[in-house]
Length: 102
Image 1 (cartoon, helix red, strand yellow):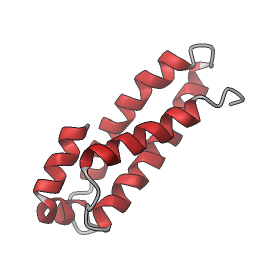
Image 2: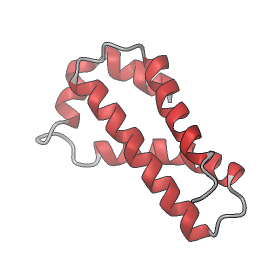
Image 3: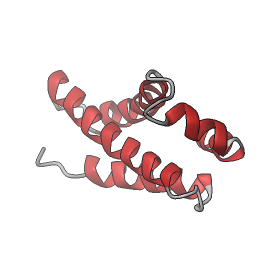
Image 4: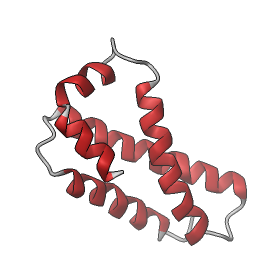
């Protein structure tokens, strides 16, 4: 995930075009799928007691939040280091997963 953010930063102009409304409509889906996969393993590991449909909803919720962070990062010039952005997404997701009253 960090490597993806590093590449995005290295090729900011190209990523900005591809991720724009006039760019590749499947680009954000691919990024979201990558994020979803990494979140899914954490959700299934830390919330084994949750029914499958609820796990899927938690994954979707966290993925959309993470995608929002990435979108904001890209739109504001990618000033933060990729590692810091990945850590923020991971920390926010971890905090949400620890909320056992889901």
